[in-house]
Length: 146
Image (cartoon, rainbow, N blue to C red; front, side, top):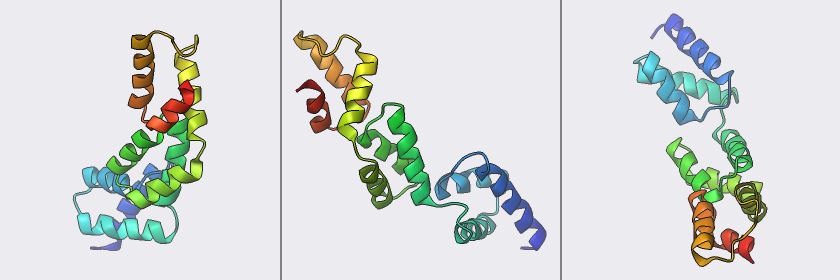
C-alpha cells in the first residue's frame, strides 16, 4: 500500500479518537466501514498503539468510571467492555481499581427509590431486581438492604 492511503486512514483514525477514547476493536470496526483494507487498518492501529493514542487499559478505566457514575454495576460494565473488544483481564483490573461498588449500588438505589427499602416482599424483590439488572452482585445488593 502506498503512503497516501496510510495517511488518509491514519488521519481518519485521529479524527475519530479526537472526540473520545475508543477501544482498539471499536476503532477497527469504524475504520473498516470507511476503508475496506484490513491489513492497512491493522498497520494504522499498531502505529496508534505505539504512539499511545489508543490504549485499551486507559479506555477501560474511563469507561468504568463513566458507567459507574450513571449507576451501573461491575457485572454489566464488564459485559459491555467485553462487547467492545476489551479482554477480561483488562476489564477486571479496571473494575477492581475503581472499587467502592457497594456505595455505587446504594447511590443507584437511592436515586431510583426515594422512599428507601420497601417492607413489602413483592416491592422489595422489584427493588432488588432493579439493582441486579443494573449489574450489581448479590453481595452489593444485600449491602443496600442490610
